[in-house]
Image (tube, rainbow, N blue to C red):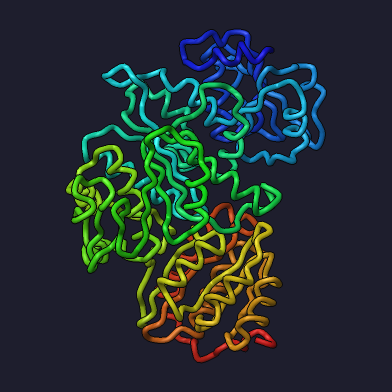
Length: 513
């Protein structure tokens, strides 16, 4: 199909009939794509290695076809289909054989974000315009910041939908008949890479955008550190009002400086220091806005205080940074400072995010299973220095040595779990040899956390914290980071209920530790 036809497909009300679209993957995102395209009248073929039984049953009902089988090479059925567009679920990396085929052939390559932007006018606001979009990315803190921003917007009376990589497909939000004023879209580096494949004239143009931070992650997907960074930087492209960046992370500032934005768009910084006239920050324990304020050169607007955040369990430094970023995004949409303060009074972090699961015998047990990479774990360790650190899992090609060198030497002990234990143990031997190391070599999922908790309890004493901050993915031994955190919490509570009193039988640390 010629590019000119695709260039006309920039509205829900355009003529999508007869468009041949191959949808790669049948997760929740893949199904939302297939469902949307079928509703538009496109000819949809879903191609996936395996299919959830419910989704497979629903596809013919909505008018889409399904092919399952090996994708080690481009299947003949896909070649014969000759799609005009390939819409890939974000799990497919750029080097996947089917993606390589699509990029080298005549088909356009989209992700779900691209499709959602094109059909964003299905439901419009009272003024006749579609919802504004706010884009949020970063190595860590995306989901919390997305939820914070949506909560602040809702407190001001705006209809806001947190969606995207947070778990609710953006296409579901676009098609919600109730409609929204603002879509707060969490975007992963995978989704941003696909967004970077855009070729049409109607390119995504968010009201505001932020990259919260940048650290190595998903390098096996992107292929290099530079490619990962470049994907993240795409969040700022074509932003209309505010590019929010982390003053403490020079990479995010450079992304803003390099971005092609709409004329008049402002760069808004945030960090935990005293803010400049276009920043949000902290002065004498008060979170303040000096960006969206008429007298920003001489005064600041109070948003909340560190003391108030501490009362809500929101005072960890990385959480405060997320709050400032969310406040900047909300303020760019006109949310009043008092709405931000009120929203924070009722906000709760999701489970498995620096969640205190128990305090017993003077020991505090903290579940931060969501710390799935070294950057996130570093933030947790900064909040709980000297903790007994439960660490490990699937490292995803990321070197953990820098984290161990920077934070590991302050740990009271380390309990190492997961399939990539050897790399972690070696990093401690090299950078923190005085820290006692205990390995959990149990392969059975149900045993891992019970053993890890017993080992941690054997060294934790009154006043100590045991911190689950794995710095790694969970899929080697658990269904998800949530499953990992739940099993940790269950093992802690089970131990407390049993009133285990055999801590004097202390195991010997790892040899060489």
